[in-house]
Image (cartoon, rainbow, N blue to C red; front, side):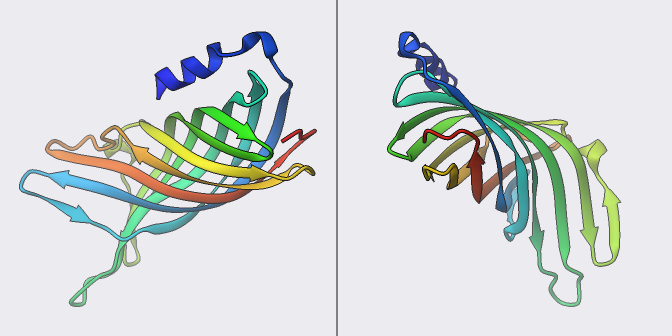
Length: 193
């Protein structure tokens, strides 16, 4: 991912285009993959939201770099069985992806690394809630890949997948990774697609 970003930055710098800014938001369908000594756990996806801002830095006519800064609600859930209460893991992150971007006639495809900073981590079982931020690592590194489309008036939509690359658990013997599918809308100021 880092290599792709560097290539996009170095390609066509002599034909640099304008930089535009925008706002974005949408829904997340988040889950975690949890492996531990002796097995693994499969949890149910949790619906959340994301919202933030981005810049689109033109490198050439069809290539650019898009840094973003946004909040996202991640986590997972599990329905209780045999009288046990439902369980919810609620994670809140500030994310900073830097995406290499290909664009053509409003269509775009992007890929790149993302670092997330943990703002909150809570585990809820039934009516009981517990803060688990001390048991969760403060940073999360992910890879992002996605596609989008922007209209000439600046409005658009995109979809992306966030694949967790690092273990977010501080607990010994656990390997927990964030994953999320995101779908949303955006508005680009002074858009030229």
